[in-house]
Length: 203
Image (cartoon, helix red, strand yellow):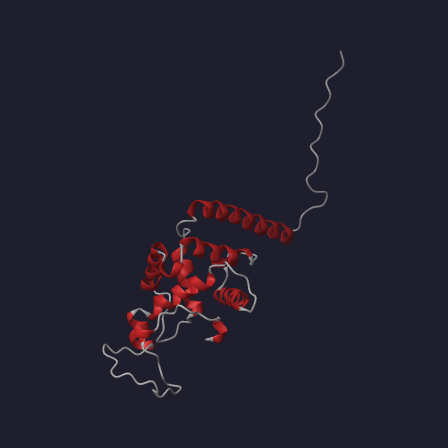
């Protein structure tokens, strides 16, 4: 009876030691991949409703479309609630799936998730995406024009947007087809709804 064979040594996973930078880089890639798997799983489960964290995402992109100033604070909680309710109601033909699609497209173009970027990089990523969608012959079916219209509608139908950024008059007065328009002119909030958004840089 022959002697049993000695257990074979398991093959080495790497032939060379891994330096700290490589190890950290691998960890980042694996972490990003894991995040992507979780997001894809969540997307399939939540395509008919906003993904978890949607309120934060809406607030961030709203503040980029309409940069916050001393007099303009787009992306406030009331604006976010308006957009979430509008998505649920299908306002302007929108849906939660459109918001999820925009979020996934932004995530896919970054080395890290969009919400993990610093504010400057978030703005750069959204502006690049916006320019690509609104460029002649740009991609269709992204959901971004519709979501952008909701962002504009949310702010400019709010008390601040309608009465401070726009002109509000309960009774605008007579019809005058030749009203003077100068650089200080502001349109009336009663005849504006943001249903035709343009590229961010073209505002």
